[in-house]
Image (cartoon, rainbow, N blue to C red):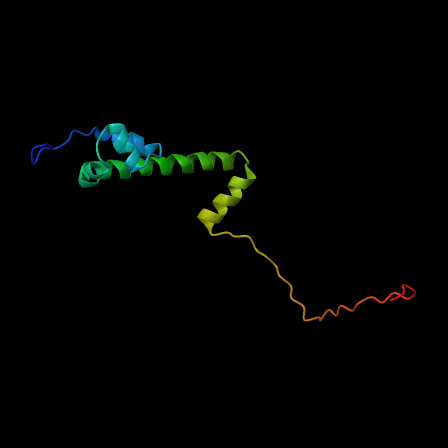
Length: 112
């Protein structure tokens, strides 16, 4: 027998946000809270908490990347330049219309 119609399963919204802020998926959050993923989907407050948590995660990652770049991490400087400044690697290609002819080598005195 299920819950009475209209009853709401208790969900710790702060915990939902904190779990989302460390990158947990909705399914993982549901397992930790012992509710169904569908319960989280139906609840507007849970959905908003997941969004807030994901924004916190992205903000933290950007901060850490920025700090690495400031410390001189060249790979991070290049990556951030591509992501935030639209920079890209330039590949120079040179095409020539020269035709290359490959001819068989005939060896004299080989008995052929």
